[in-house]
Length: 479
Image (tube, rainbow, N blue to C red; front, side):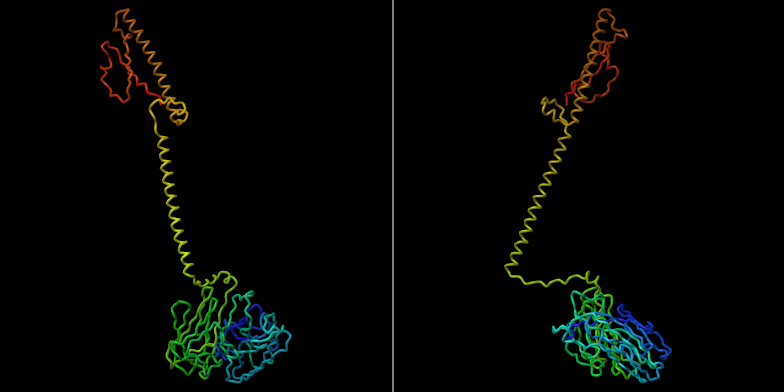
């Protein structure tokens, strides 16, 4: 089975699936230890730093831990072994037992000044990339497993457990949930097989590489990695026998970023492996592309790749991640013409509908304005049509009633004045005296036109008999 059909998942020493028994101490890769010469684990390592800067340390025989997981049978335990004191010969053993199978013991001996460093293989279980399964189907299957790791036979040595890598068959029904996946080199064989990694021309195998890793000294040579996650790290190698050089990395369409390839200045007899060369974090959830390019000189430090670590999407991020857009399909000319005719017809129809709606709105607004003007118009002439009178506006009816009352009052007043005038004239005729104060007559003048009249001198209000003049407003017609 090719490697690209298997996920290599990393479980850190602080993973909740790891259960410790015995005496263990949680510590870090940058903690100073007096009994190992006052150095840190990272200072003593030529194999890179502690992953995630956490390790579990034990100095006691019989200390153990279990790891429950679902996957294939292959599990590799990584960590660090140091001698204490550093000048002594250190011995010990680490055994791995998968399920009820026989434990596989891995004894070790450290002889000064041999340096082990971090990211060392402590023990393994199962066979890599199995081609057959227990059910006889010819395909490997993932199932629930339990790995038991025991530390024993310790002499002048400390054991630090850093992380585990187990194999898992990709399953769409059981996706990863924020797990860290290793892409690229196998820690044992150095084989780089993944459909997610594409190398350009100019790459080969590092001659002095511990992992037989991919390496290039060709300026412009590149490696491209496609991944689905939120972060990616590239680990490579540095040789003390080469001068400094440069390379670049580029994420998606962002600008390329340059990084340096420096030769080690200590422990110069060793090739420094699993060095963190590229570290990109806080990417948006989804698919990304990383391109790493050698852009230095052909005689300087080569660009060497051990592997990549990718942080996969969590379940929540997978639900939020947009679905990929399907590629466009080619269409025939007749199909495109039918689509074009439909678009033109839709546009013309829309314009016609909008025009009709606009005319309807304008006509309705004019009709409402005309109706309001007719309601406010007052006709000053009598209309004897009873049917139209019934349909008059209530305001017109009120005006008509008020006008009739005024005419009635004026008629009564005119009759009273006429009777009074006749009485005065008869009295003057009988007595022959027309200058008595109480006998002054009042002449009525009823106007027949409308309008406002200027005030006149007081003398003009007396007629030739010295009588007063009473002006009566016109008899307005009914509204």
